[in-house]
Image 1 (cartoon, helix red, strand yellow):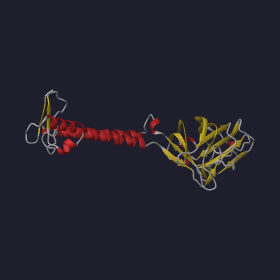
Image 2 (tube, helix red, strand yellow; image 1 turned 90 degrees about the vertical axis):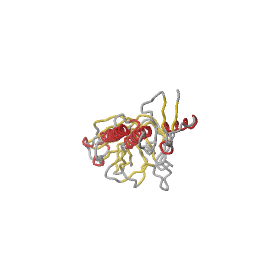
Image 3 (cartoon, helix red, strand yellow; image 1 turned 30 degrees about the vertical axis):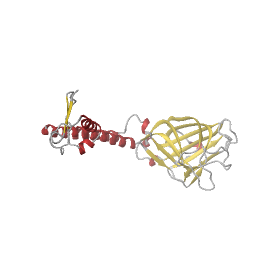
Image 4 (cartoon, one colour; image 1 turned 180 degrees about the horizontal axis):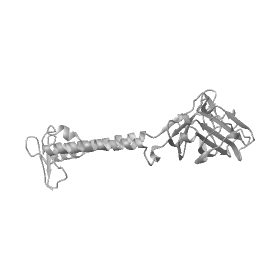
Length: 302
């Protein structure tokens, strides 16, 4: 189709100059900033006039570009805010290291049950209901400890709630609202100091009681504590304690628990939280309001 491009003096420019300005006007803001051009074509698009004459008369084309740019940046910014709202909370301290149930096997056997482990987290450590599908444990590599390698075994991890206090011994542990989190083989080293386990999403409401992580380990490699095994960070925090029973009948209860990170991967969260929806709606509202104002200004200028 025939095209003509008129410069700011009213003269018709060459086809190559016109094509350059058309391309810049459509796909970048250089034309709007550095060229005074009005573009007319016989095959009209919506708002076909492209101009940057001091953003005065005939500036509809540049306004089209910047309206799109504003809407795009607003949507991207809002999406980033929603993504960054994924929940993350770390409970516990790093006063010392602990190898059970992931880093050592003191049962005396690599066949059958290795350890039956409970870790209780105080409901007071959670300010509100949460959802998580990823656990993080932190390597303890202070001398002479070698790191936080997880020894190979089958790990069945479930979560639930309990009315028992945090410092409940193994023989008195009870759970309700139990849901499976992970069941499979684990082995390997932490990445950037953290060993992560991804599983099913668990929704926890502190009003239902303390949170309990129950880990049953079977067929775990026989790596006794003190034999060159690794350790995870643990601490004497009032927010979490542990109790366990080994296959050989040995039981233990300690007011020290693994430092644990709970997080919800944004990519697997199908439904944003209410605050995220509010930010998303607000972002579209701002973009829509700006578009309406610029449309009115363009109509008056035309």
